[in-house]
Length: 226
Image 1 (cartoon, rainbow, N blue to C red):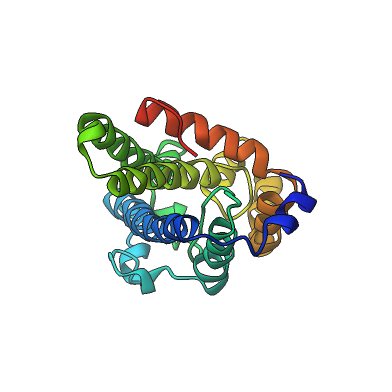
Image 2: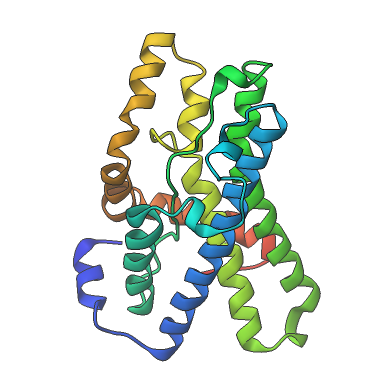
């Protein structure tokens, strides 16, 4: 969406859009709890004790909460949603404490840990879509909207975390294909994750990412999403 259009829409808050924004925030919370726990549990089962030692093998959001990625970014997105601007919903937590040296089978175990989070949110999205399909018109209208937003949000988390941005799951997969020195430099760029997120979400990638998210959501619910 062009910047001029976004600016023009800011301030056009409605009760309906505000409810959608709240549904999105609640869905992000559920999605993030599930993905972070799934990733930590997978690493733990693959003999890496680091997540457990760092307290990440927990369903408590405070274990992974990041002020920018888990607080400010979702807050900004909620404001945009409440103003009628549907930007792909996403969030990220503190860097995952995973030590590849504990993993016994490379690169398989690294791939499994990297995909655990996206697969978890993908599964949540599919469940939301199935419930909506099964319930159909018999469900209260507000519950239907909640399920659509939940499915869309979970698919958004899946798409976002598979991007090849240092600090996200997709970057760990890409790093496996690089020479050791280049992979190290690539992974170390995760300190710029906040900048990457702002550029991708609000400048260049929102339209493409939203289209992919809409496509996945549409497949899950069997119709049009947002």
